[in-house]
Structure formats: structure tokens, C-alpha cells
Image (cartoon, rainbow, N blue to C red; front, side, top):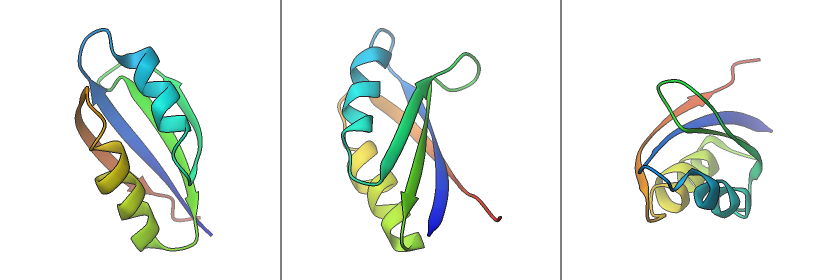
Length: 76
């Protein structure tokens, strides 16, 4: 199992909608709206690093209103 955290910057006013859309993606186990440099953090649990890339680069980045993402893979 690979756990990763995807930091999401969103367009102003889109965070609530994006949270719902991100949580609906297979592999995303939870998403939270946060204060700070990013607007949302999504936790991803999948079988391989390639699936992390698929969730982050293919699915999350394709959602309208997502400005950018950064992905961090947990090492423990």
C-alpha cells in the first residue's frame, strides 16, 4: 500500500466543490479544506506509486478550479 498526500491550490471560492469532487476519486480516502499555502489536502491510499501519479496528475489536476498540486509520498 502506498500512502500519499496531495496539496491542492484552488481558485477562490471553489474549495467546497473541489473537496467533494476530490473525495469521489478512487484512491482518495479523505480530503480537507485547510488554511495556509494550499487550500486542500487529499490523502491517497493506493497499491503503487504509478497509481498515485494517476490520481494526482490525471484526476485531481483535471478538475476545473484546480490551479496546481504538489504530491508527497509517505515513507513510513
